[in-house]
Length: 231
Image 1 (tube, rainbow, N blue to C red):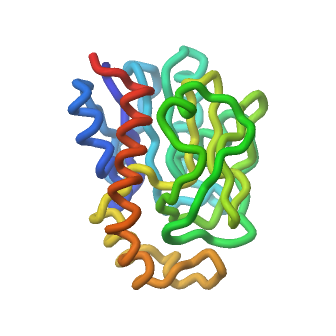
Image 2 (image 1 turned 60 degrees about the vertical axis):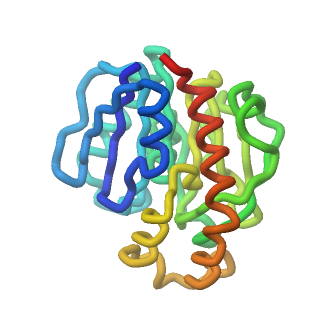
């Protein structure tokens, strides 16, 4: 299986997900938007993963590539391919499917619980728990697209995940994060300057790595193995 990965920034990589995907025997084709590589015009892979990045869709002057990426999302969706959007990628996915992206009532940075709501998804039911502690780094959120299933919520953000046709998934949180991801976000992200109830101090974020990251990576492994089965 060929997996198209759209990476928007150096800080937001596939991270721990890369090893899972290659171990499953899939080929990864990465488009680096941060290096001015153009978004493809047509579908040439079996699945697409869109990563996070520092380009909020609430900004007034969006980069031109966002519209190109939204167009490609619709082509993959119409073609029956599998799609995963993470953080910014989930917001681009939701907006491409007609939903609104807006500023959340509070930022979420650090380790926060998400819990299942009533949405149906066989893939998620068979791979992810009803409640889990996962890594967050966002201040915006998406509405749930029409006909999509609302899957997870948190105390600080109602819309944490959705699915459509059990093959298209948007996650506001970072299941793919590894230690390097977390340390990089803490170093370079301007979101560290924000204040709010959902923002954990750096010491709490770092102390949570040993407790939460291994379990999160098991969840990510389980989800990707279920969504992208071995060749």
